[in-house]
Image 1 (cartoon, rainbow, N blue to C red):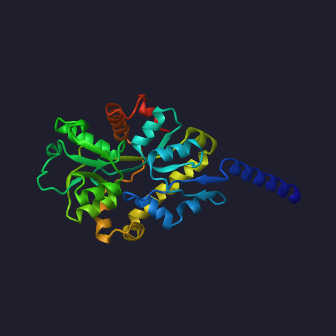
Image 2: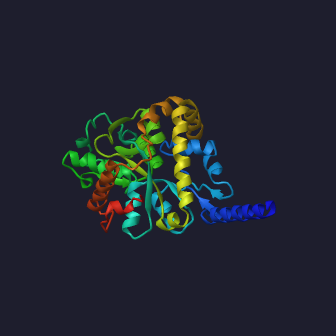
Image 3: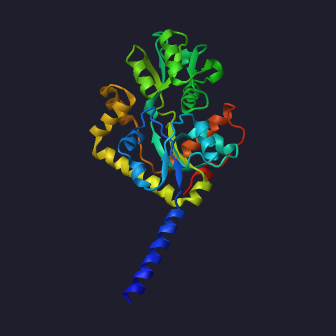
Length: 308
């Protein structure tokens, strides 16, 4: 009788193990993006949160910082989860037929995205007319610029918009090659502490929504992998709330920012991962910006992006 019971237990244990293995990938990529000030990703790295959440899974953490490259990596199944993807990139990829699904919100940080100037003669957004403004096109910063200009009855056509990444834009501003730069995170902080000043941030203009994304194909094949990511991510958020000083130390070490800068910027970020109605409304507003500025050809139902 005991031998028969033992045999049954062995079979059940083996079956459970097989079910677990079938629901988890052998290998999985999770993007790692630390800028502008992605405290949850930094803490997860230092605490090896995902390594603990996926025992037996071969993990990789590619540092893919450009949104289009992240969505391409999702489509090519090079990564399973884009942990920190700009909403502009998610919408654009989906509008072009790529498989992209939003499973959570990474952050909202309107205060962290800025239009920065040095010239004291530029006192308002109106004063940017005819000026050179550097920044990354098709991004949240681009959307901030367009929204700020629109509030003054202007468009991007009223300025000379020059495509530059954050580092190049900051350098161009410091040398006087451009009149304004669209900056965020450490690049913005360093500019502000080097004599530049904020002309406008995203408050009242954009929520600066960053999302967590996967593909429908991956989520259907490995639902447990997606669930484990979200749990590990939310556990990290809880840890940060309980250990703000340790989280700040990790962030300072990873970004190279002075501790004063880290402590100043951390409160700017809302890392709550729950998808709110206001987030969906912001996605719709982002799509309008993309279409109006010729960055998106095909309109989509943004609700179709949300994996519930």
